[in-house]
Length: 108
Image (cartoon, rainbow, N blue to C red; front, side, top):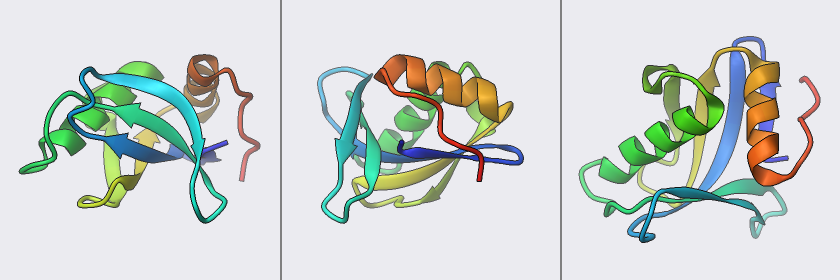
C-alpha cells in the first residue's frame, strides 16, 4: 500500500496530477522505483503551492480529518509527494483502503 501507519497517524505517498480537470483520488499507481503511490488529481495548476493545498484538502476529506491535520513532508515541487495525515491511524488507513479497494497497511 502507498501508506504506512505511524504512532500519530498515517504517512502516504501521492502521485499528483495538477490541472487534472477535477479533484479526485484515482486509485493506486506503481512508481518507477517500485514504490506504490496514491494517484490523485486536482483541478488547480501547480503554482504558488495551490496544487499542494488542494491535495491536502482532498486527502483530509478522504481520510475524514480536518485539513489542518494534513502536513506535506516532502515533494513540494515534484509530482511525487509525501503527506502525514494526523489522527487515528487505523481509521485513516481504513478510509483510504475503502477508496482504493485495497487493504490496510500493517503497523510499522
